[in-house]
Image (cartoon, rainbow, N blue to C red; front, side, top):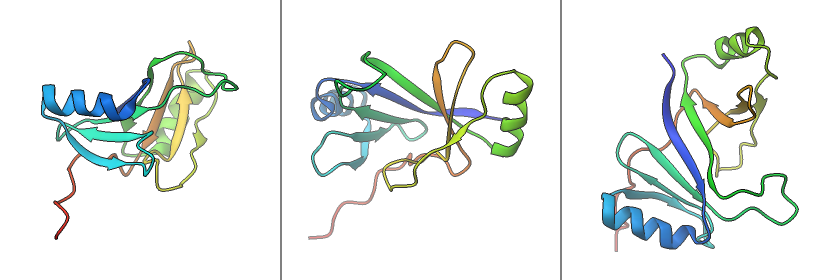
Length: 130
């Protein structure tokens, strides 16, 4: 059964937002871009991606929730269901080391969601050895 395991939020300062979620909700950091413009957190079950504001040339100009992600057993099965729902097929996502989802699609109102068979990191890495 598909389950939501990922939520992405656009925010003015991902690093500051990460500090907020870590201090208020005890979330743990699982990954941070070298420039701190993208930060991934977890509560042990869900993965929360904090993304920078959209670029001025981006189609997506709103802040707040950007997309969510489903962990699925079979992307092929979900592709069939999307076709039956009369929405465009999911498209493959770049595999660049920053994204966990293999595919992205949209619901009938255009809300984006990611699809992943592998899932999102939900455990913080062990502390670095000194």
